[in-house]
Image (cartoon, rainbow, N blue to C red; front, side):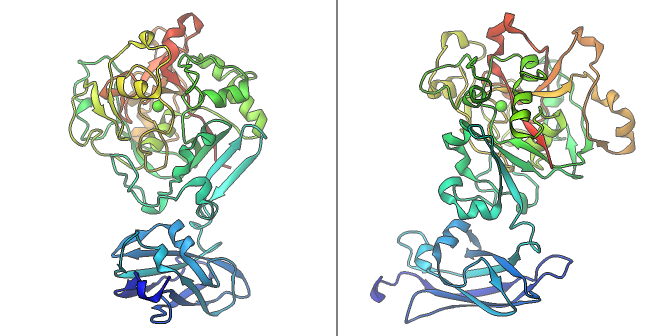
Length: 476
Ligand SMILES: [Ca+2]
């Protein structure tokens, strides 16, 4: 770049130094200096000091912002053009790295304004930098790979540029700490929905949350209009983190493990990334031949269906406001889900569209659509509402207020999991499903919605096409 075409002058510089925010004796960062090497170069040199390294080697986690807007991490990494970089920093004293600002700004921009740089020590002292966020199960090789934030940042070609704020998240902005938002949008690419299965670590351990409808949820006030289960609001807590499928289990993933393609929506061009359906719940959970058992044996990790509470915790991602912030009738069939999918649902008419293409599936309510369409929630999960409704582990109980009454009275229900079905259903067994299918109305596209059904068998094959699966593994 010629000097005459310098497009990136820093109009002002602000430096921020963060001490390592931990209680142990991790190194601290101090005296961050940012200066442009003007007029010799447009590059920006960042100097900082490390103290207390005690001979250890550390990575630094660098964040930068322009006018208060975070510059995404991949862009920041790509701008690195000199100095010691972000990895393998050794020794107390002054360290440096250099950034090429032309890679930090949008094309055509002529200046960076209010450029701020923050540095933290990443590594043992900064669990966030090395936090394992995703687990990838390779259905071809049986390999299990854990991915830290660093791994994701270092490979935007594979995982996309991570989203660490709420900009990509669907409606219903969560109240989870922003530090818990880490979404790799590359996992919407087909490979992660076909020959691999990706799970996200859900940071649930000992976080109290409200189970059931929000106090603002007008849909709960009139149960006479729509036949559904009573929803009970109570404080709940899960005692451990867990892994949850980023997507519903897809048809290709099922074929990779089980060897069959039982799904109804079998369009030859689109079947692979559509959600699995038309598989009886009893078969899916079968102790030796079911998907859960086969996946467990293949990977040495325990695959399971989510409990209703796990599903709700993950779906809400800290959100406890109105399910449809713009206001919406409970029985509306034309609405936008929390994930930003506009779905004019038209009820049960699947038989007229046995092989809909994704467009038809998405726009008509006549069928499923490829997993990963729409916005993720704040934990990076897709299609919680719509597409296929998702079987949970819990037996169905009509009245959770009664079932959990003593714990509710004590203040919090710990690890809610219903193992007793209320007799009122008259079924030998019946289970909860969550999230609603592609062809239902607005009331099912709410985190608190709970449906119930018998684990159907193939006698009722046509009714299976809107029941699907999302799998979980316990934290280890
Ligand atoms: Ca779903």
